Image (cartoon, rainbow, N blue to C red; front, side, top):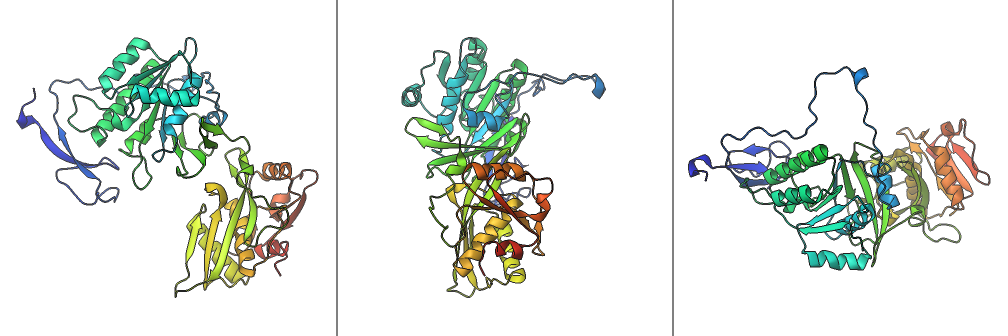
Length: 459
């Protein structure tokens, strides 16, 4: 037993892991408020330093190193495989986060069911639910796999001992904030516990080649709870962007050492679990038999290798206060503000004294500059209350001088537009070089935003 003289108290930031001798209202490193929590540390005497991994090596020339080539294992959930880069990489650690009730446990139980098979057992460890609760979800999802092993436990030593006995190929831990080590004084979910438990699991993944999936809680601000080192040690960070009130769930990769980080997966929450959406563009487009309502336009966005056609809506109204209100949903606020300024200064649309609201339908977050033209067309149409054709797609980046700049992957965007029945597209003139438009799609070009708006016939 450790004597009281060797036990000391420190205060650590739950956001960035900064430690201090006393409590502080604001962390001096990350600037977050009320993130310092008390931790009681009891150093164990004579304990040998522990390696986080087992692949230390000698200094070797680059041309003498053999690159690792392993076969990925597909989960059978196409949208999930797309985000991971084609399947699960053996021995990797994947962190999945999202709001409470959004479907993290549901998705991982479905993935565990698909991964489990003869000679490939999967261990699903639940630290938040009993085995009966997990079984109830499995019945609802139609999961009946004898190679799927269940365990309800929060003690890390017991979990690791079970892993040694069962030798699973995949370990799912729901969630990392509920697991604790007995030799650490902090409560489960504290910075020290999360950091040390994640390090032990990394040692398991890299040493034994077991693929580890960690489910993580989020804070009130929407960030993953726990120290930032948790996101650094894992190989892949996945996050549900939408809230649980939405029927459709958008899963995005924010970090991926074995694949792209700009892919998204789209799912629909049903009574039988999360269902893949093979053609997400149909979700983000409204049913408009004729012209679109004023202030609505269709833009072509790229999410990784997938082109998506989405509907952007804008509303411009007379302000009732001294300061005009700007509210943006699904688009970058600063990007939308500079488009308002360009429309006002370069194109003559009086928006300086108007309230402007912009929304991307379906809960999607559009972040690329190629969406500028579609957003600008929607705001201009809302300003003059004139609609545009429902069969026209808008694509292009807008500069501060009002010029249209070229964008990448125009051919893929136009192919998607034609596949969904669009017959006209407006693109930057610089993007026309070497372009072969799809048959049946008329492509109009513009060198400036004013010229592009001329194709909308607002004036």
